Length: 334
Image (cartoon, rainbow, N blue to C red; front, side):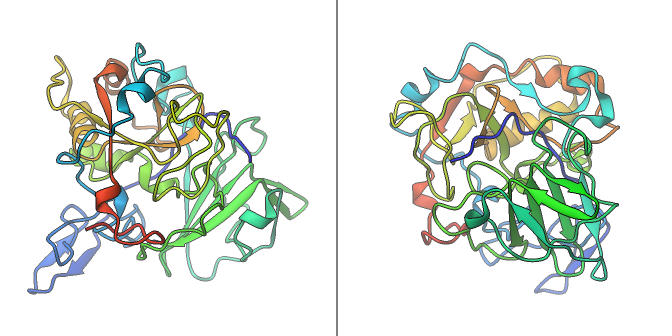
């Protein structure tokens, strides 16, 4: 089982693409078309008309009414709850626009390449749309996780790799996975992805355009240092250091208490606070405790980042999302 270092973020957001509603309404990226139950999914990725998974997907589920997990207290006791949250993107370390996971959007005619994987048995062996235009987290000579996230805007297919390198036209990665952004289908149980939890990275990343618009409609990816060798649906994989259930497993979801009311936060930071109360945080990888991820973007304001650093970890609880499950092999919720 592999364990990655601190993951960082990516992703983009709203476009002007429209969707045809069942009643003839023109649904825009600011107001995505709802599903049959009236649920609206996360906004399309910038530069595409692609949704970030269906509206009924687990990442987009409102968890305000779900019960606190019976293990919440003991998990929190092993998660450095005295800390504040840390935005793992933007100017947090003085790196400015270079800090975060970038996204690459390609068209249907982009060349496809063979990728050799370290964890070959867990990886999807398809041709990946990688090339000179592929943006890699931290740059191609980084010593970090080197995630690459690529979206084919013609097919709305997501490709993600970890430890991505290229030499003389030959591509290598630790692992790689691909998803249809219009499907709830999960990876095979036990398979990793570019994330230790076997989940896609894209849906858990804060994106500049959605924060700017004041509406974050999905859960947010985060890390902690010690995890158990268990995982909860819809996670597919673990990279834990202990068998004990006293430590949180991959796929655990945490909700910010409704009673938390920060002072002095701007509209952008409050949009993130609302998302943490409504959709929560998802434990998706090993790394520094309470680091949560967002896209690489030069427009993240310093003041916004500083405000997010004031959110206390102690005001989170783990929630039990098992009642949302429709199928073991699907991320759809009821």
